[in-house]
Picture 1 (cartoon, rainbow, N blue to C red):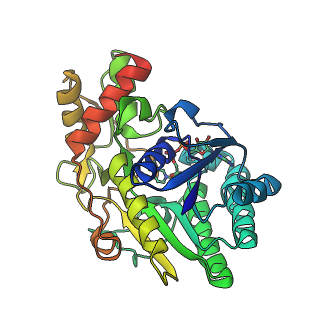
Picture 2 (picture 1 turned 45 degrees about the horizontal axis):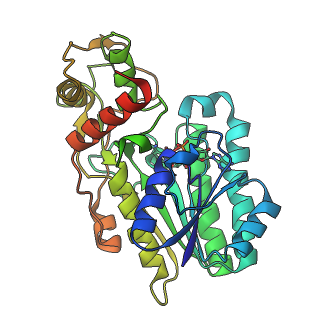
Length: 323
Ligand SMILES: NC(=O)c1ccc[n+]([C@@H]2O[C@H](COP(=O)([O-])OP(=O)(O)OC[C@H]3O[C@@H](n4cnc5c(N)ncnc54)[C@H](O)[C@@H]3O)[C@@H](O)[C@H]2O)c1
């Protein structure tokens, strides 16, 4: 098998490339480097600089490298930006996927993994979100992921491609400091950013109907997420694999923002009390995955703890930002 990883120089893509090459798979990365960092990739992974919107390039890359499976991670991923620039998000996330699936079908590739998101669910009022919980995204980013899933399944059915849509929950941590997320869009780097600037971490709302009043999320270590990709790739490569698979990728355990900030205080040694501010519009009180289907279908379960996520993310933050 030779796998093309789109968005391969990104935070998650580089971890997937490392897990797959470590397990003996051949990998090619495609990335437009709008957010990617080439040095994150293992030395034996060729990087093609280009966009998932460039059909001619995709056809050439798939043929030249005799690609037999695709892991599609390339996308814009900032919720607030998607609210401000919806057409850009539909063009790049859905348009890029359409172009890629055309090239995949044309090349006769039979395996396709799509990085979806817990954002497809919106704000469901349930204890554990299963894959059968109705999808009702509340922002254009989540909409592009849900539309992407529809497109992936339809193209899979039409062209005989075995597909998997992996719905990632809150990704954190790093397998090595140089692979860490360099953006400041998720809660862990946002807290590090505050501490590095000698400011107290912020909690947006402590009056939610949760045990300590702060929002509860399901955090997944990026190295576990990479292992889940490998398990899904293997599952799609099994003889006679067909059809489509949709699975949550989470730990199945909720951690509150206050608990997370306590863990960050322990990792950084900076235990100043957080400032409690007003709720942010659009934050659901609780979003925790049921991890049962991933265990059943992929034989995969998350192994790393939230403490390991925070500790490894902090080592990455110190490398990239000081602190
Ligand atoms: N990080 C999370 O918590 C999270 C959660 C759920 C889903 N996801 C999804 O996982 C995927 C990867 O996210 P990430 O956190 O690694 O983000 P990232 O920004 O680090 O990685 C995305 C990569 O794709 C590249 N890229 C973007 N648009 C492209 C295009 N049109 N053509 C080629 N390359 C392009 C960027 O340069 C970047 O390297 C995204 O699809 C994202 O929506 C991420």
